[in-house]
Image (cartoon, rainbow, N blue to C red; front, side, top):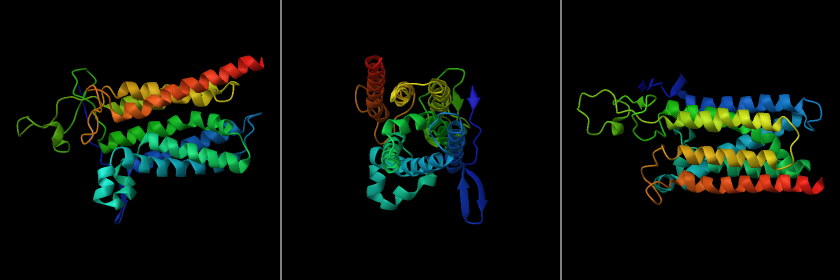
Length: 277
């Protein structure tokens, strides 16, 4: 079995200011997406300039942060808003919703495309292969924060957690127990599937000419399938629990429309291509 390395969530402190790894992971993801976007824009026939990439990444960063935090608080932590509306601003404590961030990015892309006189899916298809970098680093941030663990498991890659930091996972054990029973490190599963694997597949798929909407559609479809699958081993939020059937989670409920929407976009994209041919 693996053991949690118990990394300090605070990367470093400058006097009273604490810089958390969670925020740094988002910064690394944004920087990586920006650099790769600039590289792809420099290739002949891309139709993009470095300045356009700078602008669209800025729009998307605002969309991710605003939408991700607002979505999390509305979908998963509405009681925290009721208890103290200022909790909405405490991004450094974790709590970002991918689905909220996706809505924020969709709005950002729409605003950017409208301002630049570009088609919405022309922008979406360019941005989609860059998004998994942020998902990869964001899930690593979740792991460092020690959140979003999965169910108990006997599999050899199950991870034991230190009882001192995670006492809720050591309930029922002897008082001198140091480690919890092994659990699924579902954050790392998501980092691997929604981050690394999704990035490789989308980068390869988008490296060749594709009909408009196809790249966006493949992103929605694959992310939806990966996220829906991992939710089976990831513990639901304790204050929400399962929504139905003793297995349906809020994440699956929000992800199912992505699978359907992605399949629809792919069908429309290739259907239009066949008609044009």
